[in-house]
Image (cartoon, rainbow, N blue to C red; front, side):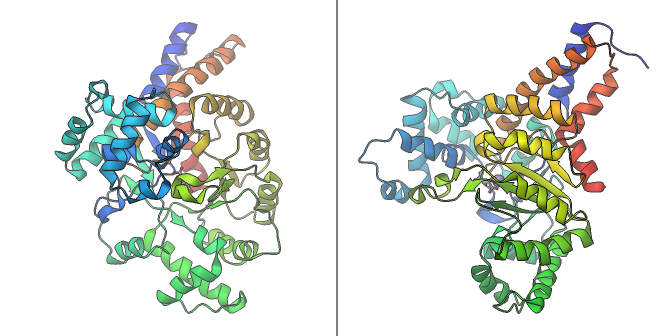
Length: 417
Ligand code: RAT
Ligand code: ZN
């Protein structure tokens, strides 16, 4: 095997591998183009991303009330965000820079400061070819969606059974069931599930059947839920019962992992709607107990608080049924991605999925991945250099193999196990 002797050659091989790796995006909020208005794309959607709405209100004048903002149509909201967050103040936050990166990668010129010109370009695109273009620019093999069968509009599209693009795979989202059984029950029964009000054996069986039917229909990569910082396991509550009696048994039976995203403090400011969620520290010992209680269920795990990350990475070393992924939401910022990547590589080697995009707007795939590639390249150059200086010599094929592991290979291995 030909290995690289020269350290600067090694460093360029690492940079090159990260720049050219094909990525699997393990968690997004994208939808197939034939699912109506569910798939968001274009500059107005980028500008009204909830991350930017939150930023707008940190500096909006007092006479811009929440109600006033929500009553505006999308393009008026986008105009306002463009004006205040790009023209009147520096677009240097991560979410703002993202819009610039996406525009530039598409060959547009954000520095022209002409929003209508940008809009005009998007108006000329057709969604199917644009989807393909974005996947090529970001260099993804596929992205995993978030598919919630308890949302009627979403369920109807899947029940209609139209084919969907191979670049979008499904994930069965189950928060609504895990966190609010009473509300979920009404929709379950509307779908013909005949679920009783009491969480007893019969109800669990009906729920397993309903969930199993949806798993059959969607063929998901995993089931998923986001949970609050106050989530504990086990607890004397519905979430524990539903995990123990419905979700984990189905997961073990079908070898279908459960992805948990823990630490979102929902509706910290309800006036901000989707932009109003905050963060709290999670209880990693609950994650540990869950992995112990359900050794036949595979858990994909990410948490929202920076403070949790070390403890979570240590847990990731202890359980074969636990796989860590992504720098979620408020952690998806260069300084934190870098810190988390270093920590995870040091504790877990390449057995981690280093990032996911969480893209809600198709175009975001472009910037979220190009920004991540930049940071991970920097971190990996250091890590490979350190191993080289310690006496190892790498072959180029080994570098590309391991970079792919970080960007989707380890995830797929975990799914297949
Ligand atoms: O990052 C986000 O866009 C959040 O609003 C959530 O969607 C979160 O990622 C989730 O999946 O719950
Ligand atoms: Zn998400």
